[in-house]
Every structure is written in C-alpha cells, then in structure tokens.
Image 1 (cartoon, helix red, strand yellow):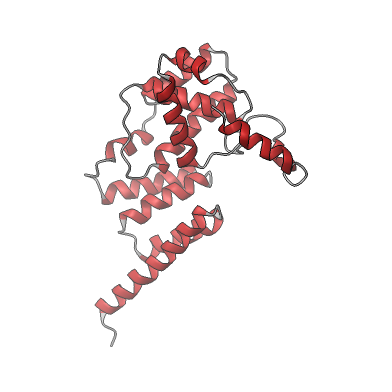
Image 2: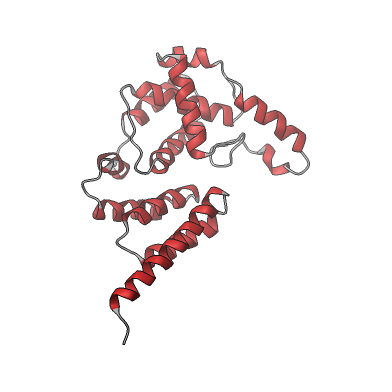
Length: 224
C-alpha cells in the first residue's frame, strides 16, 4: 500500500525538477519549453504560489496575457497578504495606473505615434509582471514614464538625447538612466525587440544577412 506522505514528497520533488528546468529554459529564451514546464509544475503542485507567479512571468513573455493574469489571480488567492499584492491587483484594474496615465499624456503631447504609446504601455505591464515579488517604488510617476518612453524610442531607432527627454518629463537624467537600465535588464530588451518594435519592417528579420548591422545596433542601443 502506498504511503501518502511518500507520494506527496515524490510529487514535490518531481514538480521542483520540472520547475527548475522550466526556469532554465526561460532564461535562455526557450519560451515554449518554459511555458510547458511551468504548466506541468503547477499541475503537480497547484498550491505552490511561487509556481503561479513564475508562470505569470513566463506567459507574459510569451505574449499570453490572459493566462498570465489567471496565474496572478491564483498567486493572490494563495498569498493574499503578500507585500506586492496591491501592485499585482492594479493589473486587474479597468483603468491605467498613474504611470500609464502620465506616460500617455506626455507621449501624446510629444505627438508620438499611437502604436508606440501602446508599446510603452505594454512594456509597463510586462515589467510589473516580470518583477515578481520584487518591490516597486513610484515616488514620481514621471520617472518611470520617461524611462518607458526613452526605451521604446530606442527600440524603434528614434533616439533622443537622454537629457532632453528627462527635461521634458521634469525628472533628472540620472533617474531616467537608472530606470531605463532596469527595464532593459528585467525584460531583456534588445535593439528592435519584436515585442515593442512598431515599424513595418523589422531589421532583425534579416538577422543572418545583417550580423554586422546588429552589432552596430547593439552599440547604438547601449549608448546613453
């Protein structure tokens, strides 16, 4: 006769092994394998809040926001008193948060295309999901709004002097630079990133033929 305790322990070990493999896949951008792995881990251990949170991050990167939000809802069900609960709950709100509103107003005032404004809002949603249980301080919405605007412009090869955009948003250049670097690192943003590039023809479509061009874009993207 099977010992239930031994069975549960075996399931936990199996789930953890699958989870570890999925995270490794996520970090090397094997997103389909990561999604499948996290789905299996959650099936084995449906009450593990961390699995649901990580699933949301992976699904967000895969562009499946409906499933990502369901995973976040499951996380909140299991961890209602989490320190980041209120931040996650904002993702379910019908309207935008203070950063989204400020960002939309300023980019509209700058006569930026609507699709680039949309890409910036998408980046903000993905960033807040990608943070997981990390804290997010927003003492001044304009600082994050400026960083989102700046990053999406750079992705779309619409470079603007950092100091000029900082002045437009009434924030310091150093704060803008710091938040920009955080966005790039957390979301693993690259030049002409398909998630946020809004042009008709992405230069990365010809990556094999344009290896030299990509190197130049990397240098340009990193320049502040």
